[in-house]
Length: 454
Image (cartoon, rainbow, N blue to C red; front, side, top):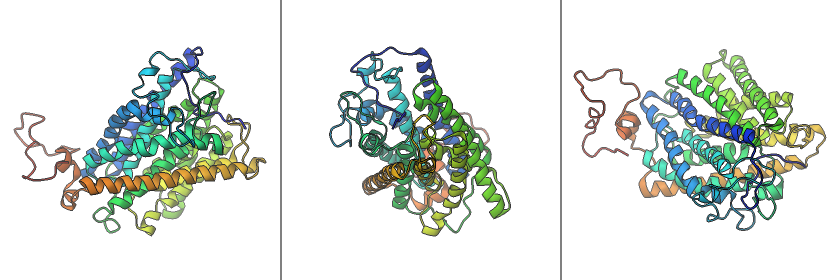
């Protein structure tokens, strides 16, 4: 079995850099970074107008905190030499990334190791930011920053080690990639299932929004949603095709499957809407596109173009049905992180065991291509392990943060609006006070004494 994916890069032996591959990974990294403001717009448009800035701040806060933590120790935990049993990398090996400043790459890779480290760090950024959508409208910003910081080191870094860190030479990597043989080209488990399971756990810890199930909580600005979705799709090419780590045939194939799955996902979702509800909505088109991209993330290097169309369409339909589960089972997943990312990630991860073809870059045949049940079993084990670990550990972290500092904003402040109470700002200054002379002072005194500013 040949598996081409996010393989480990080491500094123990040096090989020549390729300027084309390096230029592509620099571009891909920038595209993944663009996904953060794209997600902020996407999520910001989906919440109510009184929570827009808080929602966006949770994404930008994740970007800032995770970038620093990944540099300090996160990358080393994920890609350092395994400490035993394939569970965690050595936190001291690449701490601070200073060891990578003059290193190139080895093992057949032709990009600088420090660039690979940054690329991987941006994966962690978008994964952490995705979790925030499950608790929109009701979380303290300070508590969120503490949670996502601890989560980065305790949940994401170990999972990234399991899934993305391949053994090579005298370097030992993670257990799912090397012992189980899980195929996950760009993060269906480490990004999508991990964020969805973490979001579910956190939504259960925080409980329902005020009025959940009784009041309509519609997106306040669908134009922002569509703009954010477009930026996410654009950035996703860096996310998936960049994971080939070179400007090569694999990247071209992955670029194609990513395009097709996103399109098919959008069509699948709005077709279901049209048949079920009588209307094809813009929110459905954007959500279906994301669902298709979520499902193709692990499978983009394993499917044919037609297989990617099938994968995207199935994900669009299944996720459109799954978003309603929160009403049936009573959990308040504000922006459908569970319905889209967890369910879509499972569809894409398990779908490799069915639709993969050895003609694709990863060289694996699924059940429908004569590969039997073997790879399907590997995918089920890998997806289930990540789901269980992320759910349990995120729940524990969420409970501890809640006990120590309170995770849920006060009910009165939730009704008033998090933007005004927590950030002393509003997204839309439609009725500015006459005579204001300064752009930073007018909002400083809007709180009554003793109000919660966190």
